[in-house]
Length: 316
Length: 305
Figure (cartoon, each protein chain N blue to C red):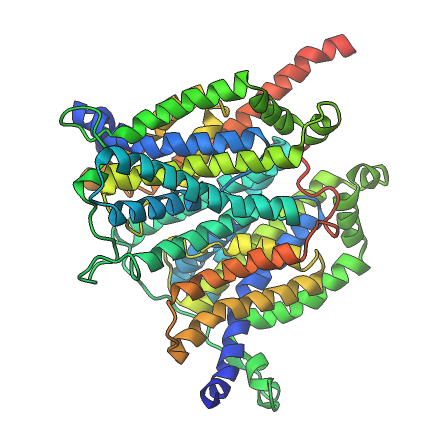
């Protein structure tokens, strides 16, 4: 009970908890959830959001450190752009491996996650380490590279606004544009999309893969620009994996991802408080994430059976 | 170069030792995949096996640890089997969820049982056994036959699996389900039951893999210590072209890739060590790309019910 109270207080107990803990943690989950959702919509199982986030974070940090004296109005958009490009480049490797060599993207993206983690570990101990060379992290960014806060006295930052914008844009694109229709058609059945719809499946899949990586890369830029103001090794406590649950629970609908991202953000913020106040390890969040995914799978089965039962009398 | 020569035998010995858990996991996954099911929860079975081994060894010594590890891996696979076979869930998503679940449960239990900081603690381990006679053979004798017990079990598992898969009715039925399930069922094979058995066998081997990692290699438990070995094992099956011998050979290659880290430490090369941490994963990608295509894959692999 004490643990649950700590969980609730940490997530919703005060305005600060909500605006500065829950929503700040929901920000990467929102962007990553969208990244996972757009890929899954096209039948691309991108499990690599974690690695794409790390690449985006490293690239955005490099820009922030190199151009610290640039005005904020230039520097922050540059971080977003470079983060997106780096994330897309990383997912592009998996896209290329799938398209040219038929490598299962589930395996390749997971391998790339490990490579990305090793790369960041090297960066913060090598070329990007802070000048005293004591801590495995980069120097802190200059003020111009700090992303603007959205509310006075709260830590909620620009990244969340970008996430909301991306959710709306992605929803519109998927539902109302020709390219979005092609994505959905490929996800519904690649062979049918190719033969009946004349869709270039390979190209559609590659583009979706790049878009997915770009969104994850922006999430990385948003973490270093809005939260840590430096590049760290343990930048992401597995946000990329939680994002899979965020996307699936929202049934891959960008509008619902806004809701599920905040839900998991609250869980994350609450778990951190729970560990602090009630000594319950915060890894329990992972269990909840997994149980949510399994519950979604079970619910789908129940739903499919109900549909089948409803259809049965007509066919009999 | 002299230094390298002196290091060669220990390197080969380490390669074989690190290949052993990969071999168990990959051979188990091979059986599962030949039945047409891809189990991405293998990583979860391995970490469960690691934790089971820690708990079992703490209570009843290293052999109890091995058994507990196998049981834990099989338990993870059982849940996966329920979702995939009974609830007809997507194999990839259900497998990913099982991996997350097992990582979360083992991490939580570890911190609750063994302390909030997760202090490093040593378990009783399986020491290498020198097989009398064989271990004194010239050349590779000491490398091949001064190994902990699980490696010898792996030596026996390879021919046993070869025989079972190609010389028994059950093995034939399993392969038939993976290639053409409807035809196999028409011939009277009970495919659900065989698939369940194949999945659970795969999980048990994943658990044995984790137990080997803890009891014969690392000697302690860390959160997330499976470190992607389950996914690498799945890649090993692809590289081994879904054959028993190919899979065993590919596991050996990856054992060497992991063992490079030890060689690197011993050689004191002026390269960042992260390069060697990343090497097995990069190697996986490169080899998968080189052996393009899924020509050898069981036809029913991954197909949702």
